[in-house]
Image 1 (cartoon, rainbow, N blue to C red):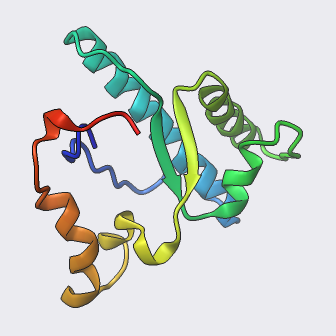
Image 2 (cartoon, rainbow, N blue to C red):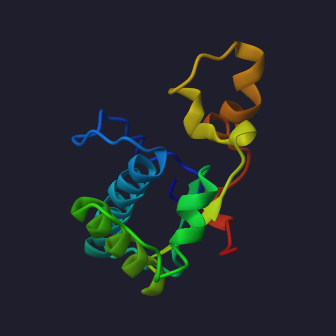
Length: 139
């Protein structure tokens, strides 16, 4: 989201088969980090100043905690590459990696089966922002 406006929603079957949720979440975090850097560059080329790091949320606490510990043990090469790319973006303050509980995670809207009443509270702020997005200040 850029100034409370959804700009991109990315969902794709992953190119690698993972046997653990940790590794698949780490690959997803790397893909997200790449999208954030691409958006930063696009905005920079358009003359929009980037004043702060981008917020990346995940619901897998193990992935989030290992992103802050550089001594984590990894066994597969592509997992190691994903880990170090995400870790580098965190250290460079391009992204901040934060935990979000599953019950309020808006990305689950399109990945799980929900009823209208369960989804509406998460969907409403994304679609119906009340106010002037130009007056949003850095948090």
